[in-house]
Length: 192
Image 1: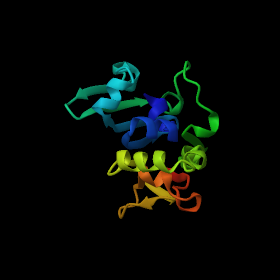
Image 2: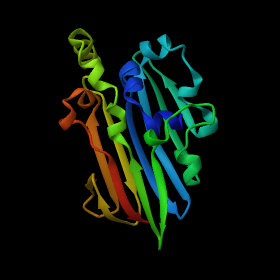
Image 3: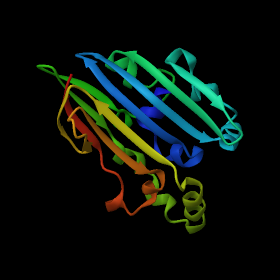
Image 4: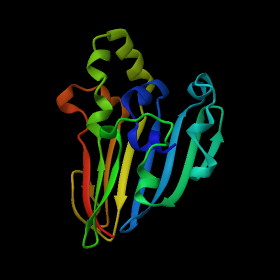
């Protein structure tokens, strides 16, 4: 489940039409809590073999199936490595993994490599029929990442009015935009 949340490669987002809303709260020098959900169309979930790794209970996931969707709500607390690392049997390039890094003095760097999500887009954009189908499937689906702490020092996202969180949100179909209009990496420096 973590690999889907914190790497979310474009091919997965496109093939499964996943909607994601994740909040990471930094609790200490090496402790964080991740909450949120991932949701995909029920038909796509079934076509993918109803794979239980989409929402693993031992990682704090609760799977809910409706006629329209497969939704995984999750809540997990652990070390930065436990929260951000892909499972050992999953092959995820390091440059596509989210990161939490202690900077000392009560400061942490949170990084989500959103530009890596779009690496395969240019080849797909050469097929107009495929692009039209993808745009229709992804209409209305979104990805939202939020990081929280006691104080946000800087962020490439939007900082809340109270200065305790930073958020980036975009439509999944934004991954299909021209290269200079796609989401940029989400980086935040915060205090816990």
